[in-house]
Image (cartoon, rainbow, N blue to C red; front, side, top):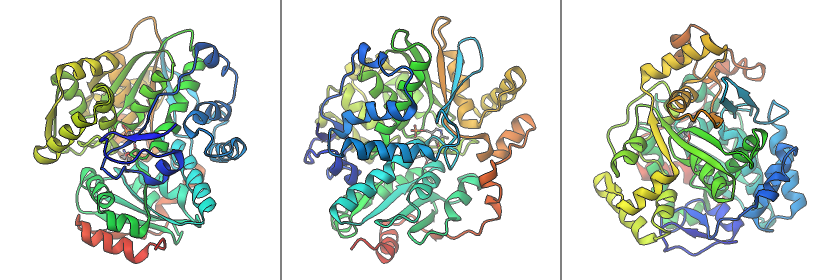
Length: 464
Ligand SMILES: Cc1ncc(COP(=O)(O)O)c(C=O)c1O
Ligand SMILES: N[C@@H](CCOP(=O)(O)O)C(=O)O
């Protein structure tokens, strides 16, 4: 199995190289040259297995022997031992056909922990094998940063630099990023929004001299290994609801399109999925795109689900590549349009292909708050605002006959102000984070200027 770039102008790489590369050298994103395929019989054989066992059976197709099976199993075991629930990602029923998949039992209370705990171990392993160090960078709208810092803190072979939009993440999210005492951790508050932070990361990767000098690697979902780790929970949840002999629908609170792209990958691998629904908050660029065929940026609006306050949804590029029949020229044209004018049109055939696979809907701020309140009073279940946007959109896209799973992407305690204002409950942080808001903060504040950021990273990175 090798990995090819969505822009078609970077060398194809094996798993380990793609893992360390993050973004491809032509600015594109890596995808497997072919989708591995599991028969219904093979999927059925996963029933009754633990999360860790299913993870190995799914991931081995992507790793393709580049990491010995025993080592991969060991890393999977260690990664998911950090989760506080025996099922790792439990499924909770909230209505006759309604389920939420709780992805927030990891160390930083967001779904990012699922992939990040494994990614850090995979990177460590590959770097140790080569006797190398790497400089890890990431942009965050709140959750990726904390999860990455937790997973990489104190690791020998990496220094990690996380760019977050100053004043635009929740206080809990900020403290998770800024209170690490580990020497290899650098939290950087940027005067801008998440899209600015993500653009800076991409520019850094495109500055080849800098990239090579500090041995840059990325932990956002531009990194294929992030997506592959997220494919696993679509399998485990579908299996526990009767899959593959029954089709399951999923609604995914969406921002950077990584999580829902992982669902698409699971489907490509053979998992019978019925509806795949993109849920957005007021930053509804993806819902508008599916409706009109035009991807058009408008200003980012700050919402109570800040992690979804995104306009440049980076993994949409992977979907475009698929929808255009893997035509890298079409992807390059679209991405050039986005860069120049903040918009591009999707041709009718590609749009039809996207609409065959996905539905989309938006939840306004009022609808998010009402969903938190109503779900609590109807079922006793407390949602965070991101999950609430999903539950609201899921209800509009249910089929009476098939189960609908909404991904619960964060714990409500990460967004106490929004939750309290919606329903009056002040959700408490779990015991291991009880003193979080008293921990001392340490971070740099920087303008959104590439040179200044590269200078800071250059001074602190040890992979030179
Ligand atoms: C809590 C939460 N929900 C949903 C999302 C959106 O996920 P994705 O960016 O994979 O679409 C994010 C950020 O990525 C998040 O942190
Ligand atoms: N919502 C994310 C944004 C970055 O997404 P990623 O999945 O590409 O890392 C966040 O919380 O940081």
